[in-house]
Image (tube, rainbow, N blue to C red):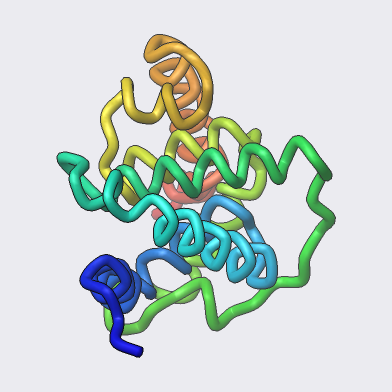
Length: 168
């Protein structure tokens, strides 16, 4: 049995973007186990609707929207529990981010509301515009701007070293 072009193209997309998919899922879900489940469910949806995904202006943005919608549905079904810290997922030495910085950012993201975290991840990790993020979150673009502003302000507050200005 030979693979159809549809299967081959969808498989190639997943193969080429596997790391991105899992990292995005981790940022949205907050735990390794949930991220792997979310990434797998996203790949299943991606494969089933490959013709729509592949014809989108930005297939990665389309897939990110699928993932955000799936995570929103999962969030509604159950509230997540606290998950132990997993250092291996927090820093990639090849990307120039130190462990402490990545850890601080992860903790900062964990303290945001679910919608603020999703808005920030979709804007700064996936590079989506307000309208696309609004669609993924089920809100208006103005709400997205508000979520981003409040989330970034909270991150700045949480990530600012209180001793930085007082050192000699």
